Length: 387
Ligand code: PMP
Ligand code: GLN
Figure 1 (spheres, rainbow, N blue to C red):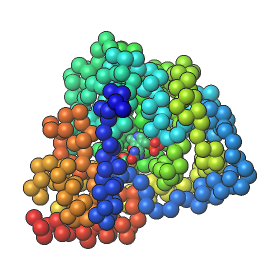
Figure 2: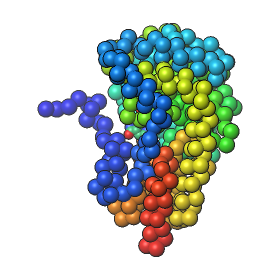
Figure 3: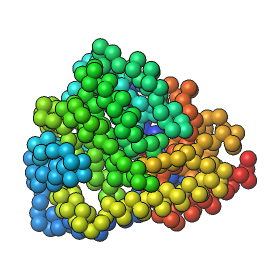
């Protein structure tokens, strides 16, 4: 059987590859981003309640009305920008919504601006829609773009931009000034912004998360995507949502209804209850304080191992340069780290269309128990001994 071109051009995700390698070598897994500690009791209780109450049948395709209303109300409270339940679409995680959003706005031949390093799903989503990805480099250590390069990436075929803030894998949060520059280009070229904000609640040091949809003239051209996976430490529950103005929502829902139609109802119910509970019990503040400690703990572990990390103000990842250990290549370093040292990390050059010219940095996830980070610390000490 000859597979379609769109399928045969797509390889196995780096997260799957490194997780398999981590299992095979018994490595401490700081690779794929997922928490290894329990989810909050109130969200698990809410899911159990929904199952006990026989909430077993299909939800409306756009998502449970009470969940959509709760998400719209939270957006209004957080950002002071009006949102309506009719502008919210619930689907099977941010991954599905990214795919739906790209299919909803990109025609074959259309160009989509993406920032490198790009989260691994974006370029395949663009390719599956028949679009062309136009990469713009973010350069370390502050992951800024070159304004002239950004402006050159926009042209008559530009249909969309995929933004991610806070940004995986760099931990960068785009400033209001940067977002304004991007927004001006999007408006000038009549482009849609697909803004992946799945780490919106994982921000540190008081850094303010600015959704690009809240900038002047952007609400009508932005699809904002978020997910409960990171916020509630339940990456396997796969409930995400998009907020977009009615014409974009209509297109998004048209695609979503024939991709999954709807997703797990007990987890949608749990998110609706969980949001209300989290807002009243201080959960979001605690989450940030807790992750700040984890980030600082991993930063210390890496520093002591001879891998001082780059600064990060959001997400649950830190980046480090393996060059001091004589590794010019991050893929080679991460393979050695996993198989020889026993710690799994993600090479980030693979998040570039041209890995050869990319910064060669390794990404470490700190959504881990103290014991896990300490076990990684013990193993990472072997790095110095061997090199
Ligand atoms: N976007 C980014 C930037 C991510 O890091 C992830 C995964 N962790 C996703 C999307 C996918 O989110 P979900 O698990 O809700 O599909
Ligand atoms: N988003 C997760 C990460 O960046 C991975 C999710 C996945 O494996 N698709 O590690």
